[in-house]
Image 1 (cartoon, rainbow, N blue to C red):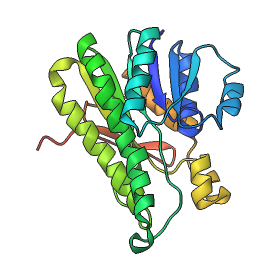
Image 2: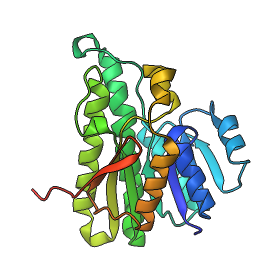
Image 3: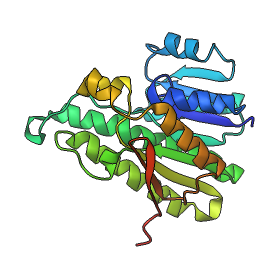
Length: 243
């Protein structure tokens, strides 16, 4: 379809599945990652597709995000979709045993980076009078998970961020909604819960396919709403709370 798609955390897991899906649809994907560690594997999976542009940036730094978006806009004057997918979780621990640094890391990567990307891209969307933002939260952003306080709290924040953006941009033809997947078979899941647990979770490709269908309108989601995907199926599509 020849759209330009921003995807953060694009070199692994759900981000890579989304990248492949959009490229197959004829779109150009600007994949943003914190490091280049997964680039060789990601490029191999997409056969070094020229429509997959990988860029390294620290999305928790405001100046870095501003410079990144400015650079990309020079090459791609119109940005169609922003997907904030970059996520972080290191280990599980009770609240009183969670370090302040660990709690802050969850907020910086899961929530603050999404805020900075939205803050920087929104003026572009407002000027071009179109745009779609999809923020990836989690089931942990709908109901808290014990020993994952930082992750759960940050993912609740992602949901709130989306609702605010949707309500503030009703007149600007800008849509924003949230995806709340349950567990997925990803490297991050395996690191925290082990390989056996990860293999029992839903496939990132399935979640990516659902997201692609929300983008096409095949699965309708109101701006400000959220869609919950668990155990390989859609379990809820929630409208934005009015009050």
